[in-house]
Image 1: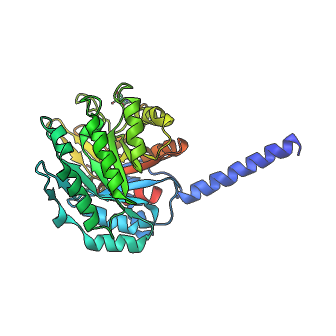
Image 2: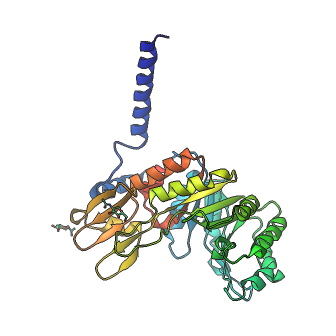
Image 3: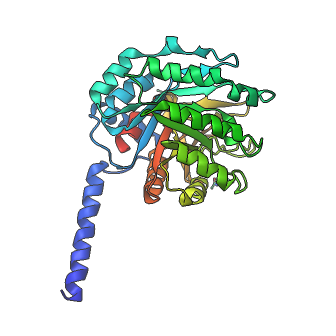
Length: 347
Ligand SMILES: *[C@@H]1O[C@H](CO)[C@@H](O)[C@H](O)[C@H]1NC(C)=O
Ligand SMILES: *[C@@H]1O[C@H](CO)[C@@H](O)[C@H](O)[C@H]1NC(C)=O
């Protein structure tokens, strides 16, 4: 092939790829609030379709935000794992949350995607003054195993959530590792999923601890949201460079990691700062807001003189999905009920 042929073929290929890309995402990625609101109405009429980003994912759903149940069923074929936030274990080892288990949703989501894995979250309420005793109490292990066995034909595993896992080295609490090792051994073929805070400094975790934890878990979630909030400035949800730092930090570990993407945001007025959801974004009067793209964080802010709303926009999502894919990792979303359907269409 001559140089001209190669150049021509490259150009031709690029045009085709561009054409396919534009077709798969509609004509443009909406940016202004009015476009987002319009395209959301379109998105709601569409079917799920298959994944655009062929990387592993996990979605949280919560009993207090029921929209998540509906959306995860509609988009089930794009989802690999789903973690309902149903359970907590109190200091006396009593499990709370069985009354919130949504049997009908489990049935419907498995029908919609028989491959989906249901891995409920169990929050363990540990006290700083006594967490070592709590962890070493055989009753705690038994309570968790009993729960998994009770639902053994429904659950594909269990997610253990306590901030103390992120503080193992701070508290020199290797007993937590031993506890998780025992749990993993008893889980048999059920999955163990762990969740860790994102990295703010490279001393936060010891490599020896991370090696043990990540090896134990079938998947580990790295919580790359809830970025440390600075009140004076616009709020940051999950700055792009911080996610990149996290992806790079964890590059030496070959285990399966999922990086967090928020479907929530914050609304800041002169009086206060409140939590903000996609359903509220759709109700705003678009002619009163402009959208700003912050290039240094790759985040969107919807604002006017009185209000500043940090909430993901479609570009926010695409930038992060592409970055995570580039690193060969997966993602997880907190949480399915707070997003808009436009986001689900993009996934
Ligand atoms: C939206 O805001 C504009 C400008 O402030 C106003 O003219 C319009 O009536 C508002 N629309 C609704 C539906 O409230
Ligand atoms: C982008 O966000 C950072 C962090 O909140 C802030 O310091 C900076 O001023 C923002 N830039 C623009 C152009 O808004």
